[in-house]
Image (cartoon, rainbow, N blue to C red):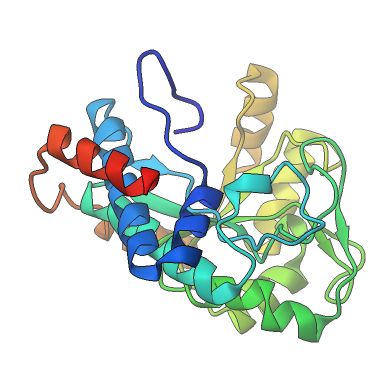
Length: 267
């Protein structure tokens, strides 16, 4: 929904606002997060959009760069796990597939991966206890998006998106995510090389599908040419994700739901 907004579509509070609600009243925070996501799904459904790249399950640290900033719910994996799951469930109830991101965690990055390559130096044990744990709590969700971040304790040479080691050992292994894995936007400057080379590296690392966002046709053609047919494990994961895509589970009185949501987030 960040790409949509007033005057044609409503604005929604950032994730951090729900984290603040949760800190005061856990049940209220979870309920507001789920209802907000359900309302987002209703807006998207009107446009025939059935996938949304949320929730963000990155932890919020004092050093977290503004590119994540208030898109992060909270500083603990427990809170992030509950709130991100509530958001995912709200989307699914409205017939929209969630994409949890940025696995295995962008919160410690102190640079904007749209412009440069962030390097996280935290020890593996610390990452396991914090960043990775948030995503482990969400490892049954249908889709996830990688982080263009180097985790020096795991693979000091390659960012997660193009690191076979991070994908196999951390995302598929320690986190236990077996859903459809999508790259973050390949046109971001954290990655180097041609767009075709970036796409090839992402697929070789273990991404199932590649994301390209800037709309530049020559770049899109390079990514499309590098993309292999969807087959094998990638096809299985895609079909499993699609099987989670159901019509809205129940009718919602949008006027009443919006009024209730406004009251909840203002509390």
